[in-house]
Length: 316
Figure (cartoon, rainbow, N blue to C red):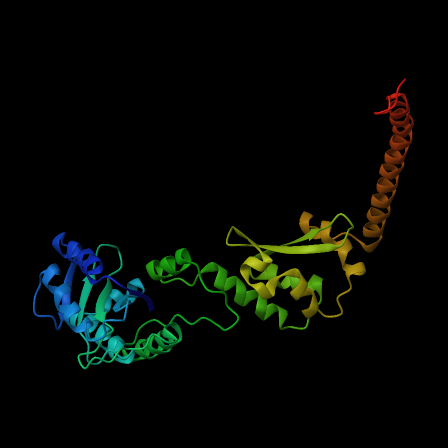
């Protein structure tokens, strides 16, 4: 389950948004302790309590709770209402105005609720460390309601909005998160570069080592489930600079010659690798010679032009 929290200033806008969903038949009101169904009157009702803290600019607490498809199908309306009330109470909204909506305008049922940060006694619910507190609470509620647990390891990057929505829609673990786990698990095996690439291949991951103009490895990228990933895009700890420190006895001079072998998908002998390196050296030497000859031919011409050009401020 994922909780998306917004703290805002205007009750009317968020209430109107949800009421429009209800009017279109795309949502229902699950629970509320407000006394009216009119958006205008609900706004006034919220603002009456809000005036107990007139200097508080952001009094609106708007949250959507999103569950994987399999979970949203098995929960009843009362379960959804109870889940939202437990979330509210867990975040400190135990004596506040609120209204809970169930949306079914997408393939996955999800809830929205609007609450007043100002309590009936005039105290304000703190928004300090909202994200950390909500994450801990969500994990607890997943256990209480027997929901699918979306566990992100400490080493995982924050998932993108698209990855989260796909995960909720299909119930599948995001490919990038799977790839992170595969690479981290493989690196823990105390292996060298060649074995690292071989083991990734066995788990469906193709590796490409990027070679700089000097012949050394300068970067790494992966192909997983037909999706290409730059190493640092998979995770900041999976950049080439970080990976090579974890490889067993890694030596740049020794291993850089394997780059063309890996990209071509074949294993060349050490002799061929050395021969290729010597060939590249000869080609580079020829290029340097040609460049040097070109400069030597060009310099006299340029010098001649400069000498023939009249100098400013001098009479001929």
